[in-house]
Length: 341
Image 1 (cartoon, one colour):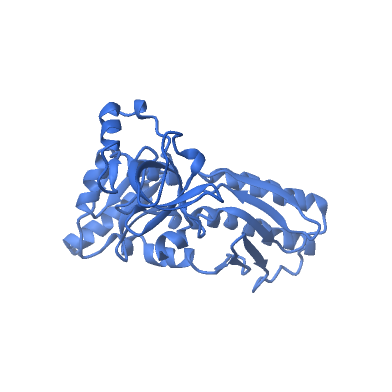
Image 2 (cartoon, helix red, strand yellow):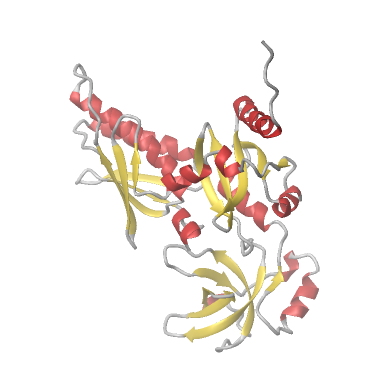
């Protein structure tokens, strides 16, 4: 019996699936989500990390002409508008001594920390122009300001964001269906491929929408039947491990059964912290373990799994109430803030 010839769309899908099967690494997919250009790291059929790559992505070397909205000497800072509708925080000690800032002034600034958890992005106005190509020209331009905009914009801003969030070793190629983005990324990466099958979008092929929906949900189910609950406050994130539908084997030792649930939960929590880009103070309420050795083993699992993150995670100790405290370096906004803002 002769085999039916594959249609062009089927060939594209088959090629992508074969590429996924043969690859020992993940794929970095850059595509649109609800009007925002997002980058998704997909590996082994799951999302590992996501970030937004919008037109206002600011690189660490970019210089922006900002407008001073208010000077607050009592807190030693200025509030500035650095892009249309975006406010930032500029400490007075990060302004050159020769400058005397006042409301309405335009001032060149460089971002030192992005906005997150309701806090404004932080900036400095102390800029070493000698580190820039044509630094003297930039310095001259900075003294003749007429509007707030980019004074200097590195063409590496997108590449910096990608390398920061995803590193360079977890994917073997970047795939995008955006011709403009393909051109920009090709300037910094050699392994960029343009996907051109509009009949079967990348988001559907890699199940990005469902993966993103799960990454933004409050509850995460584990394979064993237990689940995690994520609650966010202004000061910290609290994660509760609930036994849910988990039924231990009849022959299982109770303590070991509890440890197995906590072990799976610890591995998934570390994955979720990176995926959701949760930072700051994180408190985890695991299912109670009475054995001190099991408690130490759980801490070691968290420490080991946290090494897979591109941000610094510090695992602290177990409190008197049996809670585990960890901290994750603050840098970019959480995934929820990036997607929903």
